[in-house]
Amino acid sequence: MAALQIKIPRAQRVSDALIAIILLLIGLSLLGQCSKYLWGHPMLKGFVPMFYVDYEATAPTWYSSAALGLAGAILAIIAIAKHKLNDRFRWHWTTLSLLLFGLSADEIAMLHELPIDPMREMFQFGGALHYAWVIPGAAFVVLVGLVYLRFMFNLPSRTRNLLIFSAVVFVSGAIGVEMLSGIQADQFGEENLDYALIVTIEEMLEMLGVVILVRALLDYIEREFGDLRVEFARN
Image (cartoon, rainbow, N blue to C red):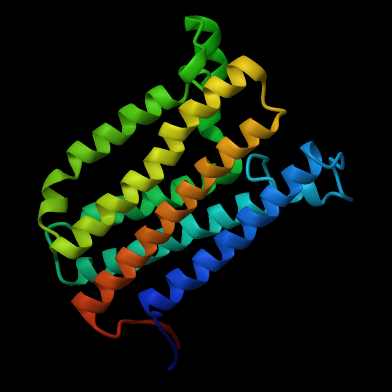
């Protein structure tokens, strides 16, 4: 029987690599928006839209989807280990993994934006609620937080603090700064440099939140399991 073993990389190395990618993507996005609004070159042979953080099917979007998928995969590895140990929180880890895979898919499919127009038309939302999905989004965050309270308090303090920090950073961008961008879009539209700067901060916070999550999970693996390896066996 042949087997392939993959060693889980160190938290520091992975987080450093992800941060470097984020800085590159954010820099390219800002460069493109300066080209569009300050220097009068809105396309640059496709460079500007390809790296703008607020457009769909762009380099930043694909990165964000991949990073969320990576977090989901790490959670799945932890969940498998917890199932083998018959840990009482094994299904919490499993559900978190599925949630991150769902967020990864949504980053590409943009399903969370579907309620925006119907809710805006029905309730005449504007200003901070211009992107009306933040209402069900905030409710979902509160629900997940309540369901996972016991789980969180049973984690090691270092892991718990990192997970809470990652959630705060991610949600402050995804919902908090999104509400600021909603105010800007409601008053002045989306085609202006101020809006571009706001959504850049929003996306950067979301990306950093995922990096902190990945670091927290890999650090947890190192502390709980040591050198954990994933093995693929073939008869």
